[in-house]
Length: 435
Image 1 (cartoon, rainbow, N blue to C red):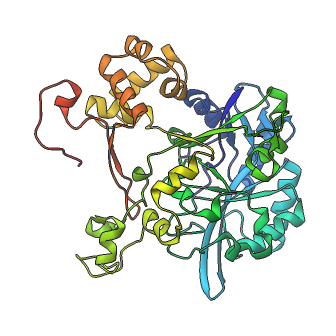
Image 2: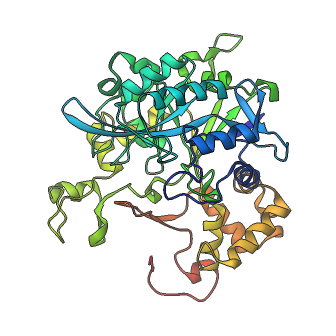
């Protein structure tokens, strides 16, 4: 059986996050989206940890469910932490996802951090004055089953490979502990092909998660795993699947059994750090233009924020074509556009409008979860439950026949499925307005 996992989200206790992010609402939203398992998030925050212990009970080993059994959604104990510390003559700012096998280990880990003087009440994603290697050492001392996955690894400000304080390799960051890092999160602004350009990552599993700050953003990226049965869904099995070194050969011994089926991806151009730019000046450009400008904004003369594609290019030792060839032996991926964005572009209106919400709710009621609609439901059934234009829009997304204006310096990119109302089947408009 296939299960969809989102291993990185936030709670209402993280900065700039929705107050509606509690476990019950998260579970309900996951069912609507089609997510089977989600990270609890923010388990170092005392109030959220209390909420977790009040609401959750262990189902299978290391996997939790709501005590009242009001949802089929399952939870894995995972959070994001911010490490800020000078290391090797440079201030490093790195975000990491941290996972624990049970609530008892979380409590021990939290107490360890509190004993070190860290203020865990300050934020759901607290800032720790540690480098990532030291944090990993602490985790392994608390319990060797704890796992670290560097988060959104390419983002400029807080990615482990980011242009504003990251490293050039996992070995540079973790030294002799680098073998403990068996997976990285690619982030919204990169896709697997971009990561396959680095041969150093060939034996590292690439995961994709939403990093959701509201229920509506859950599952915008996710992972699809195969399990034999419900009882096989455990913390240990999930970590084994994520660790390529733990994969086993088929009974015949002729191939490796990979239960990581594929990742569900944002179009990376839509991520808010894909290209280089300067938000205050509304200036954006591809890496080759940044090189010509010597990374200086032509409008104000200040340094550009160097985005993900540029940073990948700097560290890559393969071309895009070579990466695609290598990718044939890697975990595949599917690029999607969230259903509300598809509907908004189809109607030519805002994504948060009533018209979009009504149509979204109708389709969920008639056809099932959002992922089921986007991935599995036939176009004929979609047309019967909505309109021919909506079915056509979903077909375009499945085919990758879309247009994206790249994001930069904290500004999300803009996805367009239809160029204009004429392309949707209405009166033809001139030009292509992206504003």
